[in-house]
Length: 391
Figure 1 (tube, rainbow, N blue to C red):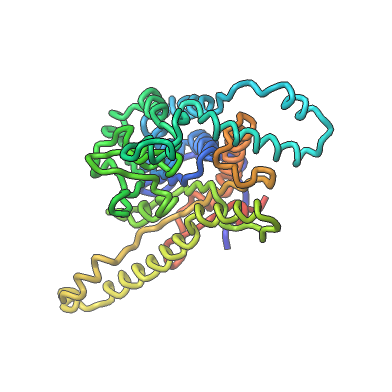
Figure 2 (cartoon, one colour; figure 1 turned 30 degrees about the vertical axis):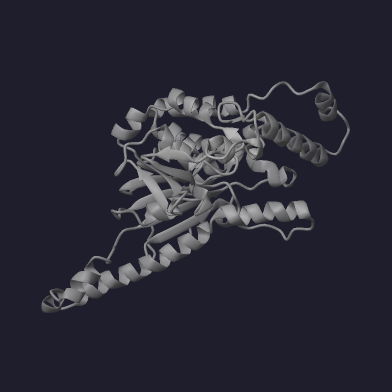
């Protein structure tokens, strides 16, 4: 049974007994400020990742973390999220709506839709701008004919807020996922195999048809979320197995209510699609680790001559005694956010997402079993404060 006693603080007294700490960041547009809040709490606890992997907006947050000194990361994250919420002052009728006696849930729903429409029509500051000529009115053959927005502002933002020399030379491993437009193959741009630049991050966040494909080394790439919206499997099944404490920060909740109307059906469809079966990936990894542990135990019991057999050598490559804590931090959207929540960039909602990520992570870290080595037979421990938390 998990230890249900709570720590008085979320701040760690010493580095947890793992070879590496990984931070895995899912895609989800405007919901990504939840990840910034989660990182703020992790940084307060001195749980700085050795490996950060992201998809889409998670790739952008990952670059802001890996591409800055530890003492500057929160400032850079705030700079980015302040910039993308830099919408013009709302008209007077919006302020009157806010101060009216209308039901709060209805009020927030209307304001969220207004903000989403604003982002759709005017773009997002520091990220994208609408093309002056829509793609259906453009001649075929270029980015202007295949996307609604120009993402040059995102490149400028990344070049200003991210030190790519630090990403490529720093001690933190960095990975972002993208999909090749022509082959459909899913790839990871990783500091173990690539020299990372703004284009790699932008490729991971190039969700069509809003954003254009991004050219990297002569090939064109779209958002990795088209294939898998989380790089969790890449981290867990990495090229080198190490004892790993993984914080998986999801922006889409796989669990939800049965829809009662079309708008709720659209919302639920996006949640299921973009949650990318995180728990299924975790369950499958646990099953594999159980087999790897069994293989290791079997090989230990074999007589010496049998260990030299070719089959034993092949099995030895699969044997494993490593341990893994997989800590799920999942954003739980409010009902009024609806299907537009991933492109609703109002300062109010961005701030709420950030606060929720911070609070969920603080609550999680107050459970001592989260940073303790697992003692299960498969060496895998999972935790979700919304399911396993006891406070």
